[in-house]
Length: 600
Image 1 (tube, rainbow, N blue to C red):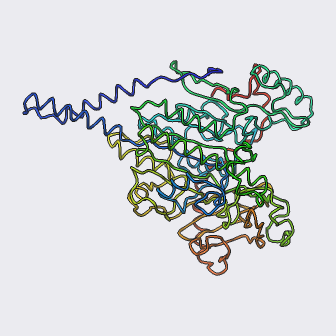
Image 2: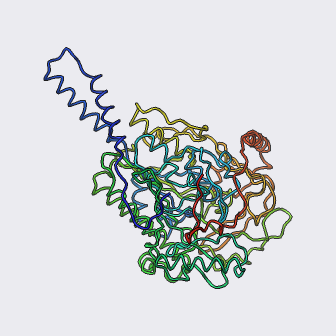
Image 3: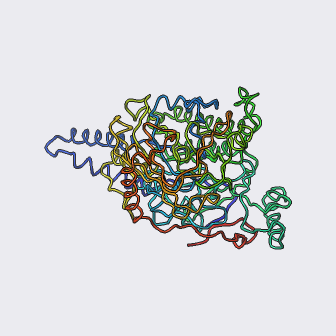
């Protein structure tokens, strides 16, 4: 690993170019007819060369965009007061995925997308990778990035990783991405990029004081204020923004981007996306994984963005709601800039743009007074007014939010846009789709454009099913059910020690063990509508009751038993959790640098 402070551009893949021309020549020779005259032979060869070259170039570029903790009701086309004109336009000209599902939390959703496998099969079913937990997606898992590389794409990851950094093999450029600009952990300040604690519990301990002295030296060495990230009576934080790539010598380069401190993360990630597109090898298609941290807490936006994007909200929206809205509008503006560049580069009609949240909005309510049978409940009107709600996101009218298996936690705002690639655009798709399906869908797309390329070898079977025909031809989908999650330890630290399980089959959804918190209905301006106490088994017909108002478990006991039987069969396939206990990361600080992955 080479540590650097300045950017170095990577070279062109010469080996790919050699194979590319060999493949063309072989096809053309096979198409030759020796009985024709010499002039015709040369003409056929030339036409063959041109047509095959065009076919190679026709492989579509793909940009997958994640918005972090975005509420189902927080984009304009869903009726929100948050302004997202670019997203609204792209969605209206594409395909809106009305039954697109993920996991209740960030890292499990990203693992599902990146691997094409349910968290119960990758060890992510017990929740997020927290600060100080050194584990991640198994290095044997085949990722979406590796799939695109297999089909000779350039691949670029930008923004939030959150799939582990225990060793360098867990980091993006070793998982199928040529370049990475972003952060390894789950969240940071949107301007300072300081992140989490290093695992020391006492903010004023001798070890913490020693650590802060080291961090002051690191800050000073890199041109930052000495107390950058070091607040009084709070544990030390460290800078987490880096640029990674493999140099011409085959070395992994790790540049800590202190020069970007103070710049807003959404703009930094958008600008890097634009630069990457501009500097791309125009003979090679690209895959971009653009994972914004917006609109994840802390709720921060430049003051000019708050004024620019939320003036219409003055007088009725709380400060955090306006900041949250500006964060979302910043993503929208970034997507607009990217779309404009695609058009000016002449590749807009051959680029597939996919937008999705990773889970529902964080609406809080992770309190000790839980909502389970036999426990105390907040009475209506107490602590439920709009002014009592601290979190600004909205999944309304869906129930629940991030961390819960109710629809507000797992149903994702999502659309696909591809003017030259999709048929029957400007429509809604009500076919069932899960994040694990993208791997198989991408594989279908790539093999369609390069049928001669052998399939990528897999170390484990994928859980996804392709829905390319749903997108391209408006055909029927193949998914009929999916696992929401199985966590036998109890889903959330502030909830009861109950199983946390849920499955969807057709229109039916079974929740075992409660499913939250949160389990209520939240509106940022009206307040909270508390749920009744939650029974152990809940059955909802999502087609008829998308807001999960009527528990039908007592009405349809046979369906409950059938779905329990499905869950029991699925449980036999659950792998052990990969979660590790938090570690003291001060041991990772070597030679006055920030914590760094270990060699494998």
